[in-house]
Image 1 (cartoon, rainbow, N blue to C red):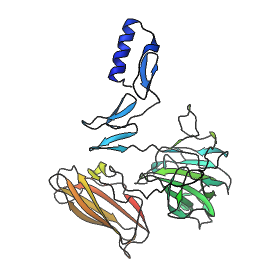
Image 2 (cartoon, helix red, strand yellow):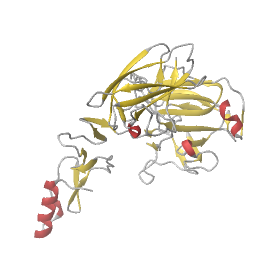
Image 3 (cartoon, helix red, strand yellow):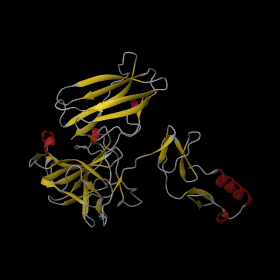
Image 4 (cartoon, rainbow, N blue to C red):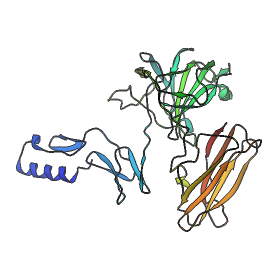
Length: 360
């Protein structure tokens, strides 16, 4: 942990003179601990930042970002921290049946998923604020085999930062919300069940990024010893109280700025990343740091195949594009990806996942 320059000099002076620890004067967001100035709370800084005076400061000249943010270009961008409440009404006691890295089904893209053992019909509440992006409740079948994976009922909530919270295995007609509804943490959204790929009644919870990969989850109800981590076998009690009023107005997620960074492309706000309207044009702008001025724009229709177009960047690497899912070619879903490309507009690398949009 790095001390501020003032805190470090004060500590050296006091240590050399044998002064008492209490005489240390610490900077903002820090406190004295055994003669040293340390951050007021444990802080994990993102790549590209360093802890200075209790804040994550971007290591980019001229840009200083606060705690939980990182400099990207010349702006401070929030680093997502997936912290949720337990998805049950306050006072409900639950147990984790299968945790992250569970060998039964929590592997691959599902490695960070969690299963809560709970009877059919248990009230499920929103673990965080957001807008409902997908619902299914017509299934009444399930089994302990992967052949039933597509039979599960679910509610999916877009958190507005490119991540979605998924609540799986709900009972038939067990969804209490509709697509487009706004929900606040603690509000009922469904009833647990045993549909889909399920060996016994439970709630499957996960948080996925724009590519469909699960993210580590930390719960507010898990004490300091566990640092928010819920694991198999642990008994938990929910403290998820609904607010008196739910007056938030979250929108469906735009693509985070660095969604396509692994492919040498960055996008500006405005490109949809969880849901889009059929037959609506979405102009977008971005930047490529690739060795040529070309960006491959690949779009996939589940009913047909990939289609490709070439976007040409200017001398500064800036480019424009337009995303459009037109019916009847598209209906319920579409996928796309942006990649730095060579002189023939062929991508330098393949890709193992792309952004999935639900189409309305």
